[in-house]
Length: 362
Image: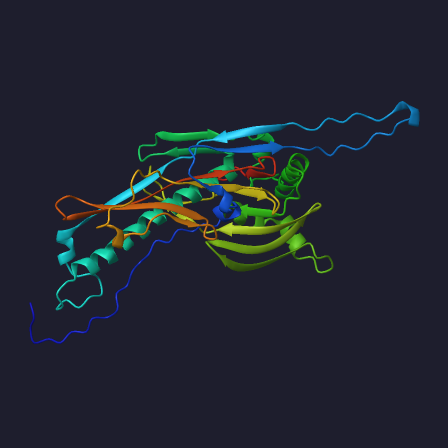
């Protein structure tokens, strides 16, 4: 209803809920990790730091060595399939930012809404992948639950318990040894994984307790020895580079992560990294992110093709989606679907770890 008042339509504002992918960014996803198979397999060969043993005389012959056998790991990736309807009746309504006095263009509005729905579904799947990544890094397992807390998918990658220790004394309590706890875990990762650990990702309370510790501050504030530096710097995807520190023989990058997701069980905004966790890994730690396609017997029908593209493999973006769309027989509803079968795999299972500092949310 118009009146004598004049009106100016300002540009629309869209509050987007982006999906941070800081932790899943540690997982590689080259083109070979994109597949159409039901399962994925990895052959793993392990070497030890053996040394050659002297022989007492040339006549005794050579010392025998065996060609190491390999182990085979097989995994069946979880499935994500999200869909949403687009009703023709809704296309009569004004789209955000449109002139209310212009007649609606049904097809144009349908394209805009279809892609908006697709982006929302993609963000949901990206957050699910990030949740997989943090579970693998914090526990060496995957347990994917529904809104009722029921586990729908579980995988135990069988890590060594020594890679997921709990601090002997809760950080912040009298007698705790933050530096000692991290040095001990670093030695385990170096010994078992044969890599030099050089990255730490702190939960929010773990970082607060660590940086407030007097012994840590003494190392960072030493004016004659360069043992560390705190100089926070945002690096994108929710990760903040806090600086570096030397702990024993290891120079660590220190990171915190401001990434959250809405818990399906509680509906609460939840940080990906547990508040009392410290994840430890190396730039040499091999972690794989694989993507399987969602099988389709026939391609999307012709009437729906203008509204959605087909499968979208994105090696650089660390994502692969099978998309589909179809129109109901009466032509009044467009269905939009996005799906994939992603899996975060700790290929180098011995080359990382996670310390539980004992801290929990109040």
